[in-house]
Length: 189
Image (cartoon, rainbow, N blue to C red):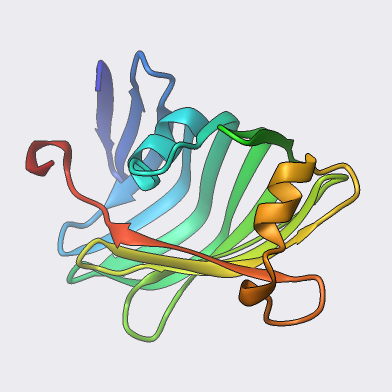
């Protein structure tokens, strides 16, 4: 991070951050082992996030992703409660060697699971693709996202053919998708 600032008040730490790659964030925090967060917001270019999550796939992303949490509680490295948590991917586009997709705004909501993972539910519906899915990020950094894709009339033909390959359908018109891995700090990669 290029810039990290904080101030200590009676209500806790007011933290803000920025990075030359376009990452910006802010939150009010208090506690250490029993961490509480208020008014948290993190914005990053989709290209940076796609590199972290899908580094082995020939896919690039455009747009801006914003994660927000009105309130959250984490203890012992586990998610305990999230209030009004959301994600938005604005001006969403994906590019691959076989074609590009222009998506509508992708919207998501956050919650905590019983085992302390952060769960995210996503949904978007554009003239090229309908996408829905759910995923988790566990306390040890493992992530798993699953969902379904449904091509729309505006999808490039070669992409539509790949998305609708017959062996992968689980219900008429819908094709399952999955992304999984482990989020590692940069120094461990």
